[in-house]
Length: 140
Image (cartoon, rainbow, N blue to C red; front, side, top):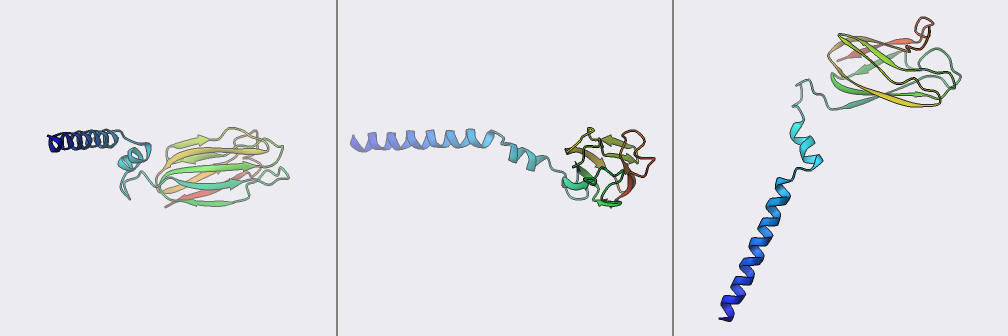
């Protein structure tokens, strides 16, 4: 009788433990979901690269980088403007036209899905682009 009770207690514990494991596995975590939905290499989804872009602290109408390169796929451009002159960062070309918010003394970002080719980036504020605040982005 004592063995039967011990066996029932163990069986109940095992069943309860198994049920808990099944519930944990069926609940998708953000990490598991992200891993499961990533596209394979070369599939155009990219690895989520980040490219840093900045302009001078003195407010000059130029970017610190005259040329940028990025891999094809989703790319986040983090733009830093340390000056009090308002600037923004815009990427244009190959059917893409996306820009950050206009900022002063801060950072802004924009994420773009890029295909291989050449793009132009520039400051869309006022006549900053016409004054030379632009560059070339090569996507490989």
